[in-house]
Length: 449
Image 1 (tube, rainbow, N blue to C red):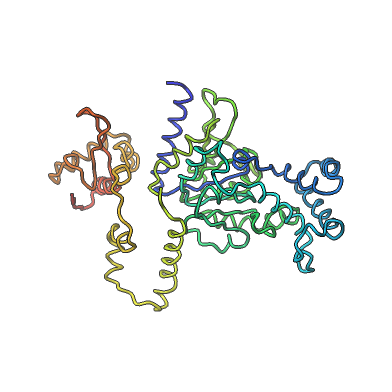
Image 2 (cartoon, helix red, strand yellow):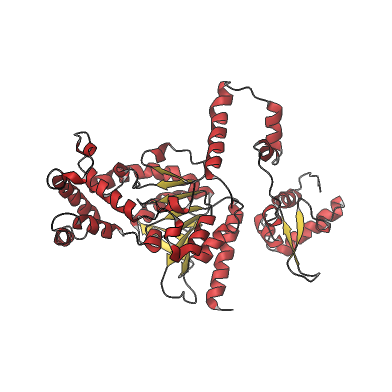
């Protein structure tokens, strides 16, 4: 087998195993590399250059600022903010909305307005506007992540993930992370210029707020698979967030095992690329898993392989989650609604009751209802291999008189994989995992086929 294909297959299997282990949709942490790839979005320094060139003597001015401030983009942004302020109140006054000249508005508003106006004009408003990447973007969209976290200002991700809601500014700190279908712009977004982090004052404020944002996002990083796209290994945005997360969830060797960083390289991947990424922050060393690639579609396809959400409406899911949380936290405790406790008890005890109550139909797809091979079942219950799990199947047959493999049932199903009688695969469900665990633990259990 070709070494590149072998590497991709191994990485794809690892991604699927991680998704299966966590039993939830992934979180995507997206940097500027993706919008640069798909529609030529500017880098941070390129954005500053474009803003500088909109001023009188702009090109010469930007080169001067780079030399004066040792090419520090934060310092350059702060200086440009002052230059835009002076320009807006003189020759450039007709370029800005009247409300920005109010005394209660910060003087950095003119630079931020110009930056957001520029990004908005560049950002495609549909996937059709990026025809060179149609298949790749379709696969990215099909992932249906639980949420997306980004430091990008542009609204490109809202175009990719239809129905996902942008969350930005102080709203992030107040937001309920149990919800689904949000894009968290932790550095602000172009639809709200005052929220973007662009000057030294902005970054100083962000550093103070970052620990609260990290704490808010900790649930995501602890309870979901996380995949980082479009950031370099040394990106300070990633390092700052991952340090806070790593201090809480990394293992004793510093590995944050449920986080993958995807590294793009234009050349073909070598024989044995590193399987981990190492980064140090403030004298501490942390590691994430790593995948190196010169193509992205196969990674997107691996991420979407476990998704049964092809036609999901994120707005509906958010509305259901928000209403459920209000019922639990406010309406029921306060006595503002009448409660049928018989119904609630059935919902609590039977996993099929809540979907029925919400009008959701159970999917009739064995690959979704029975997602595990016997080897994967073994891994989930702490056994070495499928042979050890098979011994439990036989033990259950002896003790209960039921051969789980004899029929398609809630624990097991046999899926045809070819035309020959011998071409099939046995798949097992979450119910099977629970049953095997009960048998191993010596618990009393019943089998209902």
